[in-house]
Every structure is written in C-alpha cells, then in structure tokens.
Length: 497
Image (tube, rainbow, N blue to C red; front, side, top):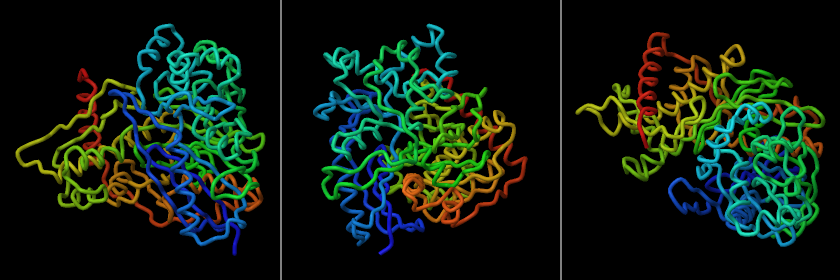
C-alpha cells in the first residue's frame, strides 16, 4: 500500500478531509457540514465544538472511503477558513465564546474609530491589510471587551487566541501546542510582515496581550504529533499549515512570481505570487504572506470578493429559481446573453478594490422580457466581473497582468462561468483535475516537511490540468460589458442601507 497524507480542509460551512497519495491522487474524501449561528443581523458565529466534531466525522468518512491503513499515513496537513477568531481556556481547552467568523461585521464601528484616529496607514504599512472587520484583530478586541473577565484572564496568561488552524492543532496534539503559521498570522491585523513577528505597537492599539498569542511557525515543518484523537493513532506528524487561499495558491503550484489563481467558493479570492518582494497596493488590494518555508518568505497580493458562490445560493434559497446550485449553469445557458441585465452581488457589501461595507446588492437593466435565465446568467457574470475588477487593480499594482489564471473551488466546475471569466479577463484559464486545491496545498506542504516530496519541482510534476479556457471575446465587446458592469457598481454604491 502506498504512503498517503491526510489533508484537513476546515471551511466556513463544513469540514472536508482528503486522503491523498504520494502522486496527488485522491484516495478518499469525507465532508461534514456544521451549523451557522446568526445572533443578530451582521453577526456570524461558529460553535468550535461543532467544528471539531465535523472534522472527526469527515476524517472517519475519508478513511473509510479510501480503504487505506492508517499506519501508512505519513503526515497531516491543515488548511482553514482564515480570520475566524477563537479564544479558549489554555488548561481546559474550553472556548470562552463562539468563534467570530470572518464574515462577521460587528466591529465595523470600531474600525471606523481607528481610521478616525489616523491609524489606517500604520496598520496597512505594518500588516499589508486594511482596517476592516473582516480581519481577526478587532474581533479579538471585541471578545476581550465583551466576555466577562476575559481581559484579566488573558493578561494572566490563562487564555489562548488563535485562528481555526491553531485550535485544530491544539486539539490534534492533546493540548500540547499553541501555534499558528505565518499565513494565518498575516491575516490578524497584529503581524508585522517585514519582521515576521507579532507587532507590539498594533497590539497596544487594540489592547491585546502578547501572552495570549500563538507561536508563529513556518508552513512546512513538523510541529508536533497526534495525541488522543478519536480514530487516529498517536504519533502522526502534523507537518503543514496554511490559510485556505494561500494553500490553494500552493496547491495550484503557483511557485513563480507572477503566477496567479482564483478560488471560487462562498466568496472568490484572487492571489498572485509576488516572490520574495512585498509589493504594496495603491488600488485597495492586500499584501499577505503566501507561505514561509524554512527561512524564506514568499509574498502574495490578494483581492477578495465577499460573495461568489453564495450569490448562486441566494438564487436557490431566497428566490427559489433553482433547486440545486449546479442547475444555474443550465438555466443561464438557456439565453445567449444577459440581455442588458447586470447583477452586482454586494449582498454583504463590496470587498476589494472598493471596500464599501454599505454597498447593496443591485440588479439593473430589467425589462418585461427579462427572465429567470437572464438573472441566472447575470449572476454568473457578476461573479466574473468582480474578479475582472480585482485583476485590473492587481495588474496596475504589479505592472502587468498574469499570463494565465489557474482556478479552483466548486464554482470553477461551471464551464459557462469559466469561459466568460476568460473572455472578460482576456487571459487563458486553467482548471486542474482536482479543484480541491486547498486540500492539495496543505498536503503538498506536509509532504515536503516529511520527505514525501523532495522539492517544489517534484510537487509541480504531480499537478495535472484538466481543461484550458481560451478567451474568445473581442476587445470592443469586452469594453462594453465592463462599462455596463461599472455603471451597475456605481448604483450599488450609491444606495443607503
């Protein structure tokens, strides 16, 4: 039996575990959803106990489906929803509150206060991020200020903060480790990108005690070993960690500066490898750690659209015009164009390059002849237009657009969307055999640490492309489409929520 790697992909709505061979073949897969909690409008929480149970369930399902012997597992890699914030009791492992999810907007006013204090440039310069409730720092501050006794306990060293990767490692090692990796640390608003350490000035502005922060490690090294995990023997190395979007960049083998990928999930995330150089954006994009291996840090530029696949879920759940998400492609394919209908899916505001939390979802161009098919097509086009905005901003920042775009995530299986994306970008799109590249990235990182893969070249050799989409739209048609989109965006941003 060949050796294999377990990849834990802990996402926003569910947890997936993939059993991957040493040639990157999927041997087994398990996935478990868990509940979302919405205490009030704009607030999104997770029960981390439910997350842990979903991981254990997915792990059991994946191993059963694969038929492998767990003794042949060489390592575990972890990739996770980023920015989601957990604080727990170090001794007991008990969370003091539900996790506050990356989508949560409860600290919008606090971010505005920090901007009014003139701190935006300081945070951007140190962290590469903008002051937005998307990131972990103000979520952590909220927990310290609103959970009784939390600040006192944190200052005494009794509480631990982490993103989901930290909590999973804590549980997988029986409480032995409190760590994170450089990619997740770089999403907290607390991490200095240049020095690669927690920044005490930023901690001071948010009132966060250094004693509660995890040790920051690289993305590919043996951190520790399993202990007391149901369904797993003790002693399996935990050897790779990266936030989901960085893991997807690695899983797409975007190892050269200028390589780019886009993941289409609940949101959509465009990342470009910028090599050892940290590039600063003048167009509302983020600078982040792509990965750290050994003493070498690779950086990336990132733009995010908060709503992508969730726009299709909205058509399904709120409007009822489709019964399942995959049906949207057939419905959209019933018409040759959206016939002037444009949908800006700003259902939770707009992310980069606008960073407008007050923008609202907007549909323009409706006529008596507009149908469900036109709206379905406009929804797919709206996803692609958001990525076109990000790609345009990125090209301006780095001095040229990507040679091609590598895609993954569930919505990348939609051929109509991928062809339209290639058309409005004017670049070829490569879709791999496995679109679960977040899991692949975690597995590759873990495999490198334990010698399953010798180097990046050996990783690249096992990566396989399933289909390429070549652009076929002429320049004038592309310009007309983009002009219609930007007019719709201006209307979405002019509304008062």
